Length: 136
Image (cartoon, rainbow, N blue to C red; front, side, top):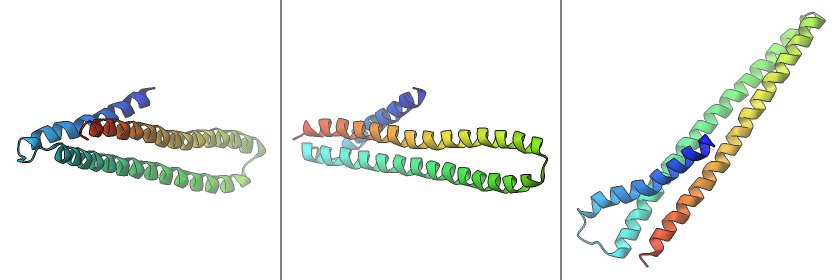
């Protein structure tokens, strides 16, 4: 729920940000036609959306890379554990199982986060289109 609120906040800032920035630039424009306004708002929204998308993808790749590294390390530890007593092996196996569940949960959250962001961005695009349609 907190993530959704955060995503909606980001979506709002993407919608509000271009309009605020446009308000500043509009004072500097000599051609304030509806078509010019529509083009400028679209350009600003596309720029902010692309930048945000790149940052999110960069973060997701970073987390996935870190998870993959821990998986490799865990396999290495499992191989080392073959020389341990049976009781220690059972304990380690249980701990590994718990850790793998946590890693799976992180991967699921990454996928979920992408889905939520895609939904929020679609909302932003729809909101933009609704505004742009007023200038037609």
